[in-house]
Length: 370
Image (cartoon, rainbow, N blue to C red):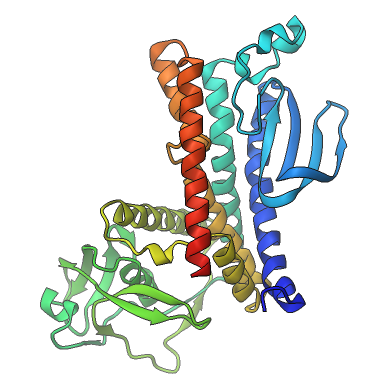
């Protein structure tokens, strides 16, 4: 049962551990760049609501752990709230020396740098984890040669043949058959362009993977793309590949590009009404996934942390007030106009953004429970 101790230990603890690390990395990005730009910081909090424990450093920043562990914030001196909404009367409340350290009084490029630093920290964190895992453990790979084509399948209709060697899918290099599988699986009902080599000739084939619902090892339904090709696996066909440190850099960037591409494609499908809303997870769903992955071991949980870190960084860049992307939109407009938007317009935007974020949280929570 949800209220049982095993549920708490198996699901909630791994989820909170993953989320705390991601939030800390994100907010530390904001904090460090703010400090580098001489901006005064009142508080660095993991979680929202009442403080559970904390301390104040010699610069006056309050570091704290708060009661609601679903996010965090860096609050700059002079902000009205944790969403970094500036106080319109801020300069009347501080002396001249303190006023120079206020976030609101920094130039627009400094403020943009502070805002971008959070998502950038998530991306860097993801890169470091994936790079370290690739160097330390390598990857299992299978030669990307098609063994068979299912009759009347999308692959057969598109013109694939047995013996085709897959080189690229949508511009992504295919190093192993597993790359081909996941590039196709993450594009259900979306057109993909496959570059193959056949009898020393390179050619392009365009195919639309059929959508198929599959059940994961944890019992979760997942929509994936299938085109109808097979790969025979012999005893010695699967090999453990260890890239060089330099090659691993390129492979890690390619992995991050793949995640970003598929994430944006997913949001694009939702925008045009083709996406599956059931695939969106909220706090309960993330807790379940974290707990399930934790059963596979620490490395699997670390890998999940890297993927979620990147996705949270991307989501924060959405142009919604309250999120980092919304702040960037305001600052971009200010950079073009030469002056910020009126306080009233900004407040209306923040209220709309707050309503959107709350609506999304309620929807994902209900979706999880259903």
